[in-house]
Length: 320
Length: 320
Image (cartoon, rainbow over all chains, first blue to last red):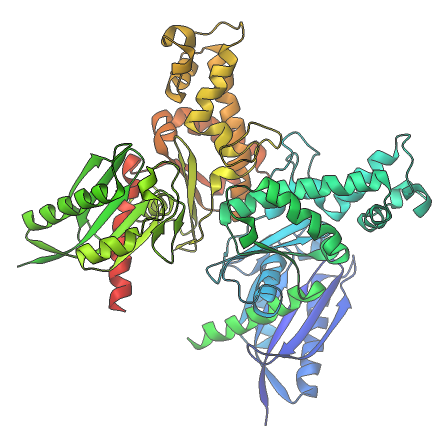
């Protein structure tokens, strides 16, 4: 008997993941491949679809719908990738949904990687059982998705661009002091590198051959080892995060805030424990004991799981 | 023929409003009365219900459901007023929904005044036609409600308590630099009063007999007249608002932000025009030309209109 399955595609700056799953259920097969800095968008899509077709055939199944999570900004109505800063130029104005729909011959839902990730965490990860949650990915940049009353808030918000230091560092977006400009992996590394230009001693100098090689991970490791300078950079990160995330908590009163992405996944409780403490001093209007601050349950897989949720929705919409 | 109508009750710190309306349609009759600093909660409720009964009788109609907007915090599930800072002590732990349900004998929906106001603006006011909007009331305090995808975000968020100046003025909530601590009517007046303690000349001194009598309205009037000190206080207000409201816009990407409450309603474009300009410099990640920044369409009536929307929902829920 041929089984009807859902396809999921998660397209990021460095890799793409594909998976097939039972509608609303478990993953049957999955794989991923590098997207490469110079690979044309069409190439990436073709490889994803070939992999999906092979997987479907190997499992004697048929794909009935697909969901795609992709780095934004997107034109959700048109299903078009507009101008993703982390993808090659060939992705600009790329009609991703229409192309996949035409090639697979099934209904397709496209959404941002952040929205896919919050759906993934909500249905399969740390967000299960919460009707109202915020997901933030803290990696090269900072992005976020919101579930309110069990529904995805379907606007393309940019939680990384709340202001946390009004006259602070210039952000890539053009504004000053955005959460992303101070707390992304890139920003944590930059703040440490700035400190290293002074005379202050730090083991960070011994950990890298060149100060410019310091990353958020190096800072985390040196802070764990008790290095003063690194501890200060890490503590500032916590303070800035508490201001930005605290504002999101105050205005939305979610039941849970889930942190994913390389920085949060790597640091785990070394980030979350002091962050919870700082949030309690920053957010006084709401009982913070009712807000769970959690690490993403699916690690780097929130997005591909979310793409499968999007696929299941495409199927539902097509059937209704 | 006896007509079936909805009742709405809006309970605020200084007055209560009541109205009867056709379900989902126009208001048939309305009135309001002072709640008074020392009037027991039961008294206020009894007067509201007596007025509603009289109005219903005068219009040969029968009340089939009621909606109530009330100053929070509330226990929404239990329908209980918990400990509203702007209402007398007799409102603490007051089972408002159960009492009104018992006395009227109809289904009742209770929500916060801010949620009622955003519903009112969404269905009857400046928010008509927008699926995603944020309503902020800027008066003695600052509160807010959010509609996402045409649904009320039903968590009790406190948009007045996003941080806009991390080490800034202490807020009533216990945190520092909240939007409310800097931009509420009370806070605008306080910042002007602080400035007046210095030597700087200002027409504000001539406008009041005692510096402590300066209000947000006095500051607005002096700023309109070009008074330097007042202009600076007003400009700081705009700057702080743009940081706080900008963060809410960035994370939610609403189609519209609607400002109500005494300060916003009174100042109108004198507040909104520079605020829009400042928001364009503060929010760079999203196209601000797609975000309408508007004055509340219903003025002080957003809440009572919203209470009627809540009443229509109580009826719907009871029938389904």
